[in-house]
Image (cartoon, rainbow, N blue to C red; front, side, top):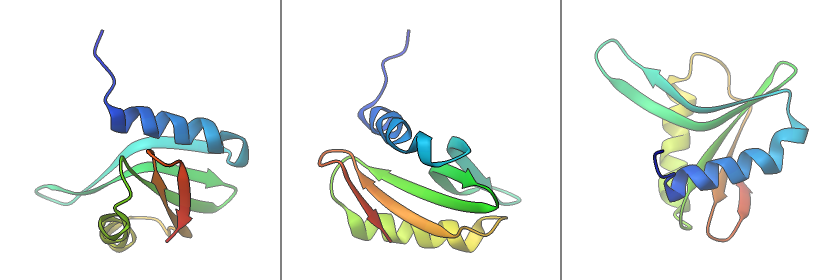
Length: 96
């Protein structure tokens, strides 16, 4: 059995926290271009026709999360309505 990384543990914690608010949750959604992977969404949540993306970090690095959220909005094939940042260490959930 493979050991679960700290980041993956935080992703699972976030999913447990928000699963009652959404219809469908997907984790580690990769967005690829023709030649390479462009970005990855840690948690993609759908409720009705609305999509929310969650960026998970082990520590409070909100600037890096904002940069990754910008890439997600730019390259995602569907419209992302809201993007959130989740800090696993503090348990903070912030709307970006």
